[in-house]
Image (cartoon, rainbow, N blue to C red):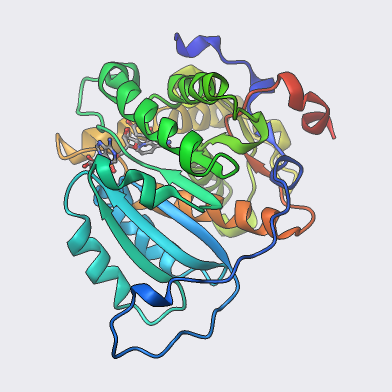
Amino acid sequence: MHPDATSPSHRIARVAAHLNPTRPQMEEGAALRPAACRAKGGAPGFKVAVVGAAGGIGQSLSLLMKMNPLVSVLHLYDVVNTPGVTADVSHMDTSAVVRGFIGQQQLEAALTGMDLVIIPAGLPRKPGMTRDDLFNKNAGIVRSICEGVAKSCPNAIVNLISNPVNSTVPIAAEVFKRAGTYCPKRLLGVTTLDVARANTFVAEVLGVDPREVNVPVVGGHAGVTILPLLSQVSPPCSFTPDEISYLTNRIQNGGTEVVEAKAGAGSATLSMAFAAAKFADACLRGMRGDAGIVECSYVASESCRSSHRR
Ligand SMILES: NC(=O)c1ccc[n+]([C@@H]2O[C@H](COP(=O)([O-])OP(=O)(O)OC[C@H]3O[C@@H](n4cnc5c(N)ncnc54)[C@H](O)[C@@H]3O)[C@@H](O)[C@H]2O)c1
Ligand SMILES: O=C(O)C[C@H](O)C(=O)O
C-alpha cells in the first residue's frame, strides 16, 4: 500500500472512546511459581503481552511495562532470546508478574487471556531504506502474530508498532476480518513517536519544556503522510514560515534522522519504547474507564468518524 493512501481523518482517535472498559483482572498464575514462593496477593491489573520482546524496542518496552502499576501480568514473547530478557526484567521489584515465551509453538500460551498486546516484532530499517522496503518481511510476521491474537485473545486491544505502519495496520485488519474478530476500535497503529518528536522539536523552537507542549500529529507514519498540526499546538502559539518549514521537515524525517545516526545499527528503539509505553498506558487508563484521554493513533476511520469529530 502506498503511504499516500492515508488521509488525516484516519489518524486522530480518542482512546477512551475506542476502548471497551474492561474490569481489571486478578492474577491467577500462582501454580507457575517455584514451590518456595508464597501465593501473591493478587494485585488487580491488566494482562499485557509484548510480542518481539527481545528486540531493540522490545527490551526497553518490557522494562517500562514492568514499571506500570496498571499491569498485573506481563507476557514477553519473541522467536529468540526471551528467557534472558524475562529473567532480567522479572527481578525488578514492581508488582507485575513476568512470564517468558519463545517460538511459534508458545505463541498461543503467550497471548491467551491478554487484555493488551503490543507488537514491536519485525525488521528495522537501515540507511537508504524506506519503511516500505520492510514490507515483504514484516507483513508475514505481523500476519502470523495477528492470527495468534485472533485465536487466543480476540478481544484484546492491539498496539501495532511494526513498520511500515501504514501497511501493517491494514494487514492486521484483514487478518482479523478473515477470523471474524475485527473491531477497528481495538486495532491501533502506534504513531506516538511522531507526537513525541513534534513536542520535542516545537518546544526547542519555543524555548519551553516539552512536557508543556502538545502537538497533534495526524495522517500516517511515513514521510509526507506524517502531518503535524502546527496550527493546533497547545498551548496556542504561532510560527514563522521558516519555522513551519523547519518543523514539518524535521518531524516528518525524524525516523530517518535516527536511522542515519545509528549508521546501520537499526532505527529508533529507546524513544520508541518510551512512546509505546506512554501510548500503552493511555490505553490501559482508557480500558479502566478513565475519561478525557486523547491520543493520536493510526486507525481505520469508517466506523469511528463520529468519535474523531468530537
Ligand atoms: N511505529 C513506530 O513509530 C516505530 C518506531 C521505531 C521502530 N518501528 C518498527 O518496529 C520494529 C522493531 O524494531 P526494533 O528496532 O525493535 O527491531 P529489532 O530487530 O531490534 O527487534 C525485532 C524483534 O522482533 C523479533 N521477531 C521477529 N519475528 C518475530 C515473530 N514472528 N514473532 C515475534 N517476534 C519476532 C526479533 O527476534 C527481534 O527480537 C521494526 O519494524 C521497526 O521499523 C516502528
Ligand atoms: O524510521 C524508522 O524506520 C523507524 C520508525 O518508524 C521511526 O519513525 O523512528
